[in-house]
Amino acid sequence: QVQFVESGGGLVQPGGSLRLSCAASGSTFSIYAMGWYRQAPGKQRELVARITNDGSTNYADSVKGRFTISRDNAKNTVYLQMNSLKPEDTAVYYCRADRSILATIYSYWGQGTQVTVSS
Image: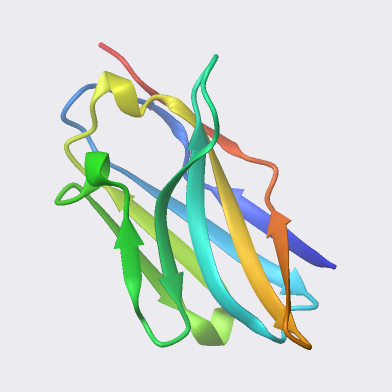
């Protein structure tokens, strides 16, 4: 199993910034990708940003140019720097780690952290 410690959520005004952190522990071997997903009330959970071990990233179109994902492989920690926040970014943000074991993918989710963008 993989456990997570997520931090950095909170209330911020439109145009502000937040930085989310997610530290993974436990069975972290074979983790090849980590990412952030979000779920707003009444909506499906969606990918925000994802980063692989080799540093390849992908972002949702809605956050490109505003959010930056980074990773410290030695610490099994992933960060999400969120700038120019908008009210529509309000959601619960979840960390996820993907492991590949014998060609089977296992995904593990954090407990989520609330991000609220409001004046």
